[in-house]
Image (cartoon, one colour):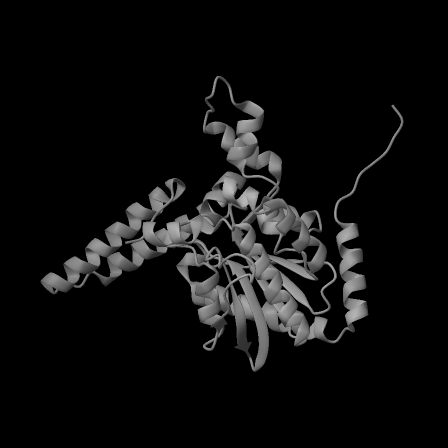
Length: 325
């Protein structure tokens, strides 16, 4: 059964009518193809109208859509021989981050990404895509492995943020993230990062220090969630109006369209009308084109040139103005 967000309710009504007409036609041998065709055209036009005018908060909700493809979905669409590697060799394996070698178009590539779960049981197992320190240490171990064998790295970013629990803090959550930032900046093999859903805070950035950064059309990338921002700025007497979430999302400038304007990302990967979950195969094809193009371009550079340009790229992010009062 399809899941519809609140702003998709008009589309849901039309699509339910279409399904009812199709069932009616099957059962009573009635030819209502023309009516179905008209409704499908109307639904497509309505979907186009809605999705061409999404607010940042609506894009945030779409980036979290429960039917949206996750890292393993894309990996399985991109490669048939993915070999998942486990453990950080220090404490444990963290299911919130997956990684391993895969063959894509004849080339061996290290794929690493956040993994959310589907259904209550898997979501708990994956900790809702919120990694523990051992998850980031596992990711770094795999990156170093790729560097040793001179294989390119592709990371898929999709997390609300690093897990803030007591155990995670006791095992050095901030140190694990900081180490990843430092080490990724100087790994001597190409790194491409793709935000496929939520890019939340340092938990996302720990897989995002790359030579090239891309975002899916309806993904978001921000230092804090709209809810977290709103709670800090507008919480009163322990309560907060949900309307403030939209206000915070506007202020955070977290959409792919905002970030390409700030030159933080390199390009936007298009999604089908209605979001990536409407046609995961088409999105995987778009991602494949980016991976092949970027990997070929970056693999032609020497290790020294690669790390030098990565450093310069990071230094260019952000700008400020000075003036006299």
